[in-house]
Image (cartoon, rainbow, N blue to C red):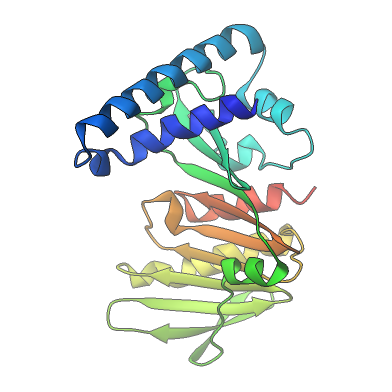
Length: 252
């Protein structure tokens, strides 16, 4: 399993860093091509031996990591078929989520050229202090007070190129930012506040940070990250509320 995920990591890394590889030497390019070939062979072999028509990518992922908790697929995207690509290196487990038209096995090579819509990460760090630094909690109580409903009062700050709202609740810090469309800033913050009135995020030990952007357009611009001792969890989604739904689905 570790060999499979390591090879899969090399495959995904090859695709994500294509621009950098363009400047590498001929020797490096040859080595990379060999890695791709080996990874495809490993993935195809795994597909024929480890999956069946009734298996899903989530089933396969849970088979590899039976003790891990992952976001529920319908929290990632409830309207479309999802595929997953998982990698693990140096204590960091990463799962990428893709939209597909039909079910495909975990780490299918066809996913390499697709753009992910979401991501989950579990990071094992050296200490609680290192985990807190990775979460990077941020809260600024200054600014104009804005009533978001749901018993939440945020403060609004205006900058030259963006506005943002933030508030704090228990161990969680919330930041909603708009770089372009400021008129959507408060509606998104109110939507998040109303959602959190109905569901609960995982309880951090010790801190958590939610950062959402209006019209983020990229999955890594909307992130929920929290600490459990020396372990950090992250959910990211191209849809701002999607990252919240992913995190909330792990509170089980």
